[in-house]
Structure formats: structure tokens, C-alpha cells
Length: 486
Image 1 (tube, rainbow, N blue to C red):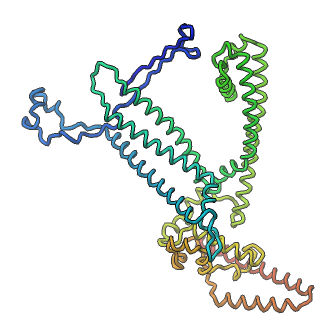
Image 2: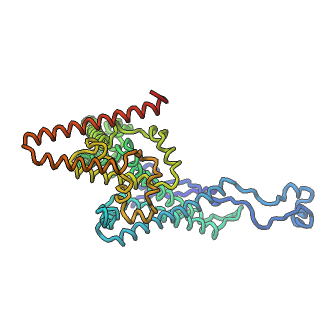
Image 3: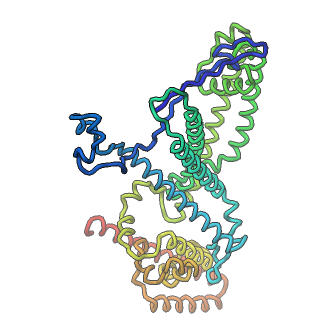
């Protein structure tokens, strides 16, 4: 580690010396830099045996103390070697992710500008360039990868600088390379800080897999327009109060000497930082008290509570929307992450080797569900059991051809999926039921409108009865599974 002191003397235009705590005054910076970031183990100039012949120069210099002083090779620091290995792995990982990202762009460009629908299922599974470039996360990913590349370039230049400008100690001259190395390190830290903040922002993209985590994303989405208008008003108030302090107290106080300093001081006062009210009152007591009371009431009390009300209201709206979406799928409440982690679904997923991926399977089931509901004009739960059953062929046909080809999906892989509960209803029963329904519809069409309404009501009650019977059987099966018997 090397430490250097950088002193910048400040003088006014007339040549007068300026103190440390004044604008443009003298500054003293004490900086440290590590010129050996990787203290690796010595790999060359090592001897195998500790004899006088192999270490003649060392023995001539140190005599009998040579075995203790002339070591075989420097051990270095294991933590530095681990750091170097982690950085190399990180760079390889970054280039791998960038390559995947470029492949995704190329595949979307091959599809075209608009999304390409599957010829058989008429489902937009192939993403085009329009869907890619209109996604906000696309630009966040690009900026994230650019900052990673900047980090690699800066880190590489820093290592090259150290290798080409090594310092031999002791030395009787000032090494200017210390300042260059510090500037490179400081620039790297600034870019890394921005990149870490961006990585934290990208975490919201991956929080969408869990409903309770997705509420946070949905809250920001719902509150977006209100937050935009709120910050317009907030920045107007903050700028106005900053101008007032700059005019009243700027000539005497350094914290208000410039307009940016005055605005930042007002912002820190809003956050609860202590303000030098004694100095402000010494300049103009009445205006200092009036400014403080007005600022605290309008900004700290009203505006901040309005911000809290916007977020709370948006959170409740987002939670209701997410709950409604999951209730349509048959859930009574939002599933917790702990329930998902410790559920049997993970064990079934881990033991379902060669099965179709759950994401593709759920997408296919959702499309089949929408198709059945559109055909019958009601929800899937309102249909009778034979009508609501889905065959393997239905799921297979609902998966686009391109997805089937890329993932090598067959009917056998669909049967291995642990997320599906199979029924013992056969094809013959379904055909018989279809024949009965078709005959009933033909007979109903010839009846009087009043009789048709009665028959339709009777059919609805029959379907409801079948649904209740199905729920009863599921409840009995669940009781047997939980308690081992009735």
C-alpha cells in the first residue's frame, strides 16, 4: 500500500490566500492505493533442494542463517488468488451473458419487426423486434452490460499500468504513477457503484416469478403516473426554497453560497439533517424562522405524506389486482414463497426427469383453457367433468411447433410432467358424452321457447351437480392423502 498527499492551494484573483473551508479554498487530499492487488505465489526462480550448491548466493550472503532467511518461494496470499480467479470467472460469465443477449437479438431480428404467430395454434410465441425494443428491461440490460464491459476495460488498464510501472522500494523520488493508479481506481469505483445500483434495479425484473414479490413491481407500475406528477411538484417546491436561501443567506453562509448547494442543503434538511439555524438567525432572524416553518410544513409534512399516501394506495390496488388474477386460477389467496419452497411440487419437479418444462406446460394449459371457455361461453370450473377434461393431444397441439422442436417435446415428455393430475376418463366415455349432448341439443331445438328455457335450466343444474360431485371426490382424495384414511 502506498499513500500520497495532494495539496491544492487556493488563491483569489487578487492573490489572497483562501482558507480550507471557503469556496475555492485550499484542499488537502490523502489517498492510498494498492500497487500489488494480486500477491500471487512465486512460480519461477525457485529451487528444489536447500543445499549450498542450489543456493550459493544466498548462503554466501547470509551464512549459517541462510536456511531460515532464504526461503524457497513466497507464499503470497490465498485470498488474492481467490480474488483473481473470481474476477476471471466473472469476466467469462459476462461475455457468456452478452453472447446470449446478442443471440436473442439476432433471433428476434430473424422473426421480423412484428411477432410471428404460430401457423397451427395461432399464438404469438416467436418474439419480434417490436416487442423487444418496446420493453423497458431491454435498455436496462444493455446499459448493465455496457457498464460491465467498462469495468473490464478499466480493470485491465489498471493491471497493465501496474505491470509496466512497478515501484522498487526504497526510493528517493515521488512516483507519479501513484496518482494515475488512484484515478483509475476511483473511476472504476464510480462505474461499479452505478452498475451495482443498476443490478439492484434489474432484480425487480426477476421478482415477477413470485406473486407476493410481484406486488412491488405492480405497485411501482400503478403509482408511476402519480409519482411523476408528484416529483414535478416536489422539485418545484425544493427549487423555490433553495432560491430563497441562496438569496437571503448565500453571501454569508457557505452551504447556501451557490444555487446547487442551497438546493442540496434544503434536501438534507427535509431528511432530518441538522441545519445551522443559529448562523441563519444571526444573518436574518425573522426570515430564518419563517423559512424554516414554511419549509417544514409544506415539504416535510404535506408533500412527504402525500408521497406515502400514493404508495400505500398503489400497493393496495396492486395487491387486489394480483389477488384477482390468482383467484381466477383457483387460488383463494396469494401463495407464499415459503409454501412454494417447502411444497411437494419441487420434489415432483426434481424427480420428473425428461419431462416438459413447467413454463411451457403452463402456457399450453392456459391456451387450452381459454379455447374451451371461448367455445362454451363460461369458465372452466362451470363445465361438466367430461367437457373440462384435457387430453395429451390437446396440450401437444397447443405447444407451437418451434417450441416443440427446440425443446424436443413429445407426448411422452408431457406425460412425465409432475404438475398435471391425470384422470381415468377414456376416449369412449368422452365420445358417448358428446353424442348424448348432441342428441339433447337437437331435441331441445324443436321444443317451445318456454320448454327450451326449462331444459336449459335443467342442464345447468345437472352440470352444477356434476361439479359438486367432482369437488366432493377431490376433497375425499385430499383427506385420504393427508390422514391416510377416512
